[in-house]
Image (cartoon, rainbow, N blue to C red; front, side):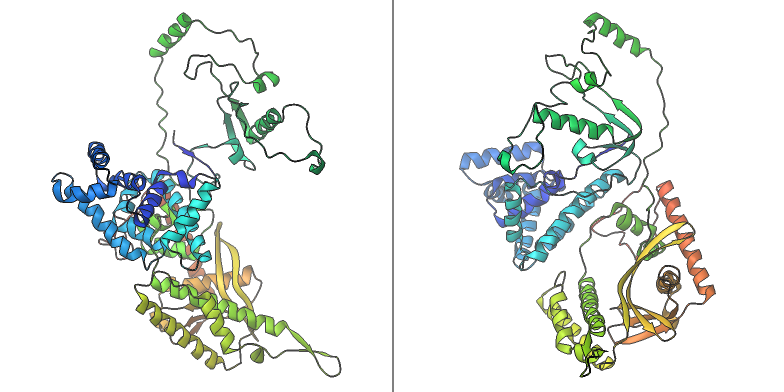
Length: 579
């Protein structure tokens, strides 16, 4: 049966993450032989065990670091030389990048340039998903560090990571135990707190294992500071008993215990006292003789073989769908598989960074516009009057929000970054001049919603909602090229049509206009969907979701074309089989 081990901690001890940390350490200090050894063992570099042992012996003989050793062998070893040169060239290339790029960018560079991401993506689908979950968690931690650290360099990241490890931090590993695919989920009692499962198996129920004799030295608190009533007896045993209760109460329908007298070793095991206390076993169980055991095993040799005909493990369909997911599948099912099923991390793009910077700026600015409208002033007679929103917000404030929101990741070089920064300032100045103080009456920013169509649950966020005399206006910002209405495809319109339906059914507001606002030229494209347009959008949603579910059921996500222009069939990720 397929299984997965679930843990909320331990990210930094996962093999792939340890490989990445080792490579970063190698870039930071070539002569850290422990890191170099770990890197040499990464499968993409194809060093055999015998080769690495030879490197270690020569390093010890010459009193060299392991890195100095492979540098020497690159010129003199015919067998290993080519493989060593590939690794050294990679290290040299990334050493240059370390000086100007952030830690997350170096990680992506290594994953792509070394072919490691392609290697990891060639595993069986379930293994890919587990690995990508770990990669995404590590990259999330890296991005969190970069948001806190002004430089975000590899050296600073490694220093912060070292402090975490020294303090006992193991790295958070978020997950959803209720999510698919259907498989056995193995987890500790601590990790199971707050969760429920249809069937629960509590294994290894033997004395000295559960309850365990291991106990950490607690930090003693003076009794005077303890406000609760302290339990009598062995506090460690009581804590183990409490955990046993937690484990049992995770089961919805079936609860099973297992123990065995022999788990290896010289001593036979006794059943856990918890099983005895619960009258599930007696503490004087008769031990079978060796002869009887032999006979029992012999009888099993002629036992009938069972063929369960278990289906291949498949992925679970999403509980929620978004427009982005549906559009991704519509363009290329294989790209959907990579992005939304396996969730393989990909390096960012500078235009995404720019677009996010502009969105954050406008969100903050129009938030200030809303606050200024809600502010009140008192006139000479003590009457409350609304403050003038136009005078309450300024260009300086808008540009300050831009500076605060600027994301400088994934630009090719300093020149490109500066060009986009100036471009953003120009756009915002033109936007401020265009409105000339006559700001729209904004009533919603990043307005979230959940909507059910054909029994399927969809979610989304609307960039901006304005109040008009005839209803509301739904605005979606675009940082790409300006398009005329006749050049917008149906699936692009479906995004705002979905928002139109959500506004009417969820927000209980009457949509009067849908607007794509193109920041590049500060121009607008306005339209409003008819009942027929809404019906077509709903049909597209239902049809696409049915296709997604069918692909998941059959484990089949083909490319939309060959070569595929959407997902880069020959990209650094490589071809991934979903079967």
